[in-house]
Image 1 (cartoon, helix red, strand yellow):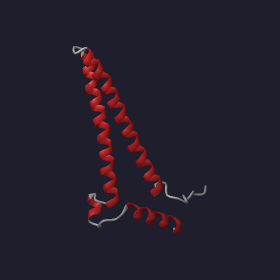
Image 2 (cartoon, helix red, strand yellow):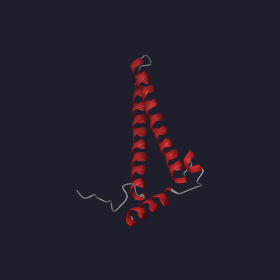
Image 3 (cartoon, one colour):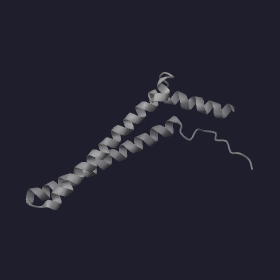
Image 4 (tube, one colour):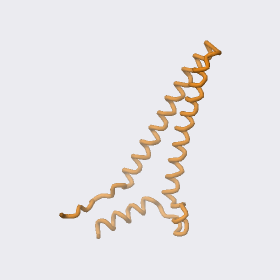
Length: 112
């Protein structure tokens, strides 16, 4: 059985940028929906101050909004570490750009 060699990297710079943008867009829309739901339950509490269920839902909506925001921050941190190679292993090698690493990997695959 012949071994299949990839012509293009499965994680090239364009695909990586596209995936990161999609994750950030999804996180933003999740946050917006959580805030809309929070406002809905806030209106319910404004009408009936003793509605404990609506108050609990408000708290949960705020937690969802904060989680979505935290995911965006984590993605940005991960991207920063990948781009500047600041993890413990890469720090000793100096600052290497992720796209340079991908390009080197692509050249190795094409030549080898």
